[in-house]
Image (tube, rainbow, N blue to C red; front, side, top):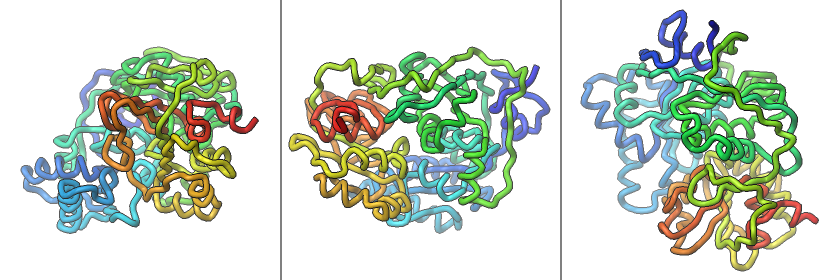
Length: 420
């Protein structure tokens, strides 16, 4: 029997001819990641080992969660990250003002590539599966040890084959794809499994769509989400890296735990209602739900395509007087491109807030905390109770087009309602 993409990558990095689901392996890592919350947790574990970092060129330390620092505690966390990076001469430490949200920044900079094993002390590290890498989140202890050894252990996950056909209708995006999948299988439907996206529909998805889908694989309980490397992937990488990489493809006789089929052409704009990403409903079927805030950004939907979608709906209009709209570009490069395209001016003219790149409100950090009873439509990845503030607030997950339309109308809305 053959192997899946995930199994092939793990086998190669473990020095094995073949691996099987459930097998415990020790695999070499190609790239490691930590941020201003998780880095300070991993550093003490690393220091217990008493060794230098395994390779200062293969570690990224990105202050993005509470940066610019919101208080003394967050400043101390960022300082710990900064001092560790200087002490160990970490190549990929990016300071505030030049940084971005980690999972937008790393692919943009060409630091992660197909066929690699990438671990990060952040659950949404699975984002890099969009370019054909095995990427997954780990705890601070595992990351601290890996910074010293350059490898880590895994239980090889079984895989779910997600076959995509067709093409997305207008105003439907990768967020609608992954929310629809999570709505179908639940937040534990892929627990400790690999979600392998395949089929002719993949070619019709942009790289932005793929990053969004891979990013939220963890919301289905998955160990990782992974896409095949095709012409779009190669083109995306060509402008960002000249580092050699290996492309792995699943064998025709690879074994999957189950197979799920999604016709992209039949999808519509959806929203995940509180308080789970699986609580998914088509926007068209919702009653009137008035909102107080909209957030467009995050590692899930903070790329230039996301801002372009929002700008097409917001341009020339005004944010509803009862709504606070917060726009957060994923990186400084995205911010600059959005300025060049005129999106930032359009957002500000409409009455929106535009922030420097930061995770900010996504994790209830700052820059948009909700009070009791308030509702927010957000392009972020989680809507657990209290995720963005008070435990009695509500977060509705959606793509940037739905979020923008909702910001204009003051209620959860489809883009066509604004553009009619």
